[in-house]
Image 1 (cartoon, one colour):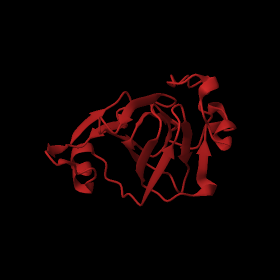
Image 2 (cartoon, helix red, strand yellow):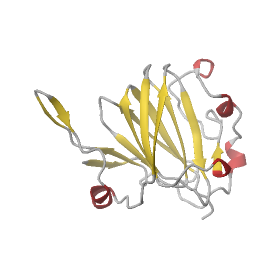
Image 3 (cartoon, one colour):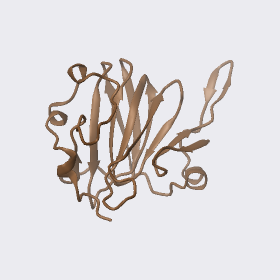
Image 4 (tube, one colour):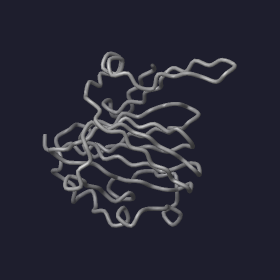
Length: 186
């Protein structure tokens, strides 16, 4: 397993080893003891989620959950590719309001660790993209929060023009970053 800290050290790109032969390949994509030992991620994962996006330029996010159901996420792509981003929403953090991103694809086999207290979103870079992710807390509609994907204060460099972005009705009307302050107090 290769572990790389991104521009925000707590956000990590994790690439499991793949072992190939004439039949194809084998990869251990998740091991709690190895994740703890090699990446310092020692939280229980309680739910797996999967999304499918038919079109390139589909944006999902920016989402998070607040207490008592704050979620960390381990994200990977099993078909297609995404630009995956994490925004630090932890009030008082030295990287508060900053972001880290990585391209994840079925081809590069990388995963992204988004710690609790971060907003998460992604944009599909290919049609028919499937994403699976493990979360450290169960889904809670009451604790669900979000920030508009193209907030000017965050100035995220999304790989799609605004007029071509495909969003859910819910994601189109998320609040601004300035309204999200205090979700994760220091």
